[in-house]
Length: 166
Image 1 (spheres, rainbow, N blue to C red):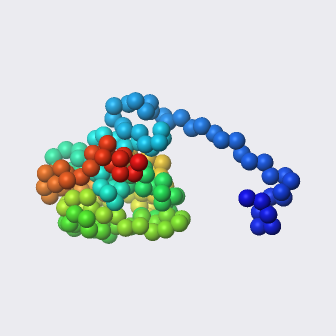
Image 2: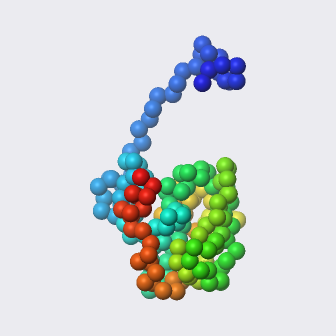
Image 3: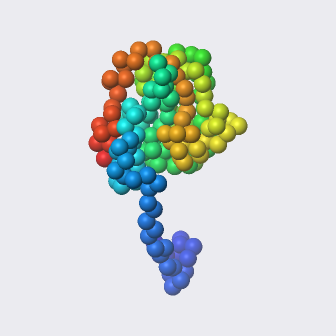
């Protein structure tokens, strides 16, 4: 964009060359489905249409976070609030919020569950940007106890979620 509102004079502007970033893991790795050759959706997670993921760990204990797609749409996260620790939250009900530079967004519980823990690594004394850097790993948001594991059958698998955001 050239003109009076541009900070670069029309004669000195040089566009930056495009840089190709390669994923750390092969796009053919069996644990991931790839979106647009860069976004990954782990096959061991279930997904919601509101862009949360849920990964069942042991028994009824699971981790919940936002998808790579969601964090990329929100941009850099600056604050995450969860005030539902210790409470049972119904499916599709708000359990917290994420605040990005651009906007604030509600977080919806994928299934009815008791919130056991808020990830301190992304909380007040932590770094919310971990969600941007590692949404399916260190950037999880809450640990939950699922009320009825059969409810996970109503969530999307990786291929269905990829088709949704495709």
